Amino acid sequence: MEKILIIVDMQKDFVDGSLGTKEAQAIVPAVKEKIENFNGDIIFTKDTHGEDYMNTQEGQNLPIPHCIKGTPGHEIINELQPYVKKALAVFEK
Image (cartoon, rainbow, N blue to C red; front, top):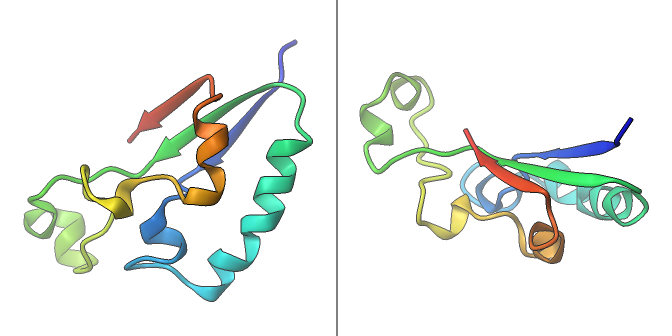
């Protein structure tokens, strides 16, 4: 059986951007260490919204634009970028 590590939504807006927190920033070294010591394929996911986010149902309930495709906040954080290049896949959801 092949091993796969899924890294979920480690995007700028969730770590140190519009919805970022000190707690999210604090887990970055542990995530990086987990990736470095993992023997298998890695998959990243990205929360993805369009320019019309504020007009969506989610935007009405969470009126903070985040992870808008094409913006820096949509990108995986810089600390994990080297691993994105080696990842099996990056899925936008």
